[in-house]
Length: 404
Image (cartoon, rainbow, N blue to C red; front, side, top):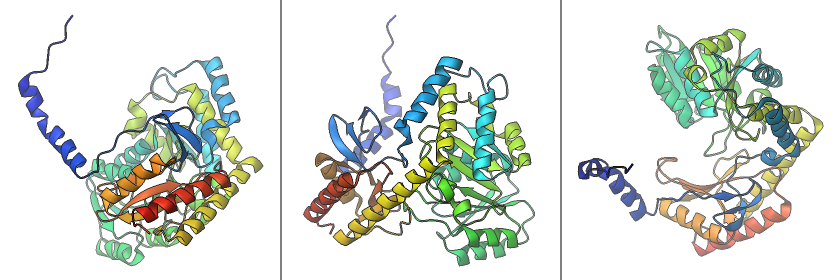
């Protein structure tokens, strides 16, 4: 059977998309997806070229860890390749419940629910627990998944200046008599700048102004706190944060997201969290992989990985600054190399890739106009020699492009 050709009218209806893409190309902001050939490692092959990988969220190198590989293979052999249903019908396996209990223990929380991604964990939770009569007070640099969840909830959204506690309190003072529920929400580690939220001060404000306190710890889990327990543990704010968000897709090395909090919160999300209700549950291989990852994290081996991550991070930051690069406000393994002009940032990234270093460029709308950058992420599995070679290349190309 021959597929009918698209009508001229149909093509014209989407002409605006073609024009928008051409505009991106004219501004040198268009990017092609780089194709990974093989494993996600510190040195790997993208588009047929071997490069030092400074663009992965694989903080602890767990994507290829032997223990996680074995867990995935064993679970596939035992349980098959899929769960076959959503959690609320026939898709909740015992291992799903075991993983949620394991994460709750690790995070020192009452209970946990696992979602299909970190994005759906954020967007599904905020939209489930709040409605049109409620108020959300949100840091201006919060992740897109938080922003989308806030919009989906139909609550009133008030944004405070990034990490500005005075501005946050101003918003809370102006809304002291708000009739509905109030949510104060922040990233733990901010994904573009790599800085850390002032969580103790935010908790104090949440308590003073009767707000639900929520933290997205996607880039802090496996990175900050004792054995990677996150910002709540890092600042010893246990019992002061009502909703902890985490991801299974970064330091944990697999895929998914989760919410930790009170038993009532988790039971409510079982009933009303739309991504939970309408998406098939994780396959056995992914679930077993995550179980193995948390078991590893909560051990001496995991502690060594977290310490190596920070040793590499401090070394890389120190050398970048010595070369004359601006690393912004970073306090974590996320280390931006600030460029400013978007076209130059993308050119910088392309030239580095040609020289064997993969460091992705970010411009508007991912970051504000005039604040384009390369975003580098250091991992526990980078060798010191890899980082030295990457730094030499970054310095040489940066001088050539007059960035330093």
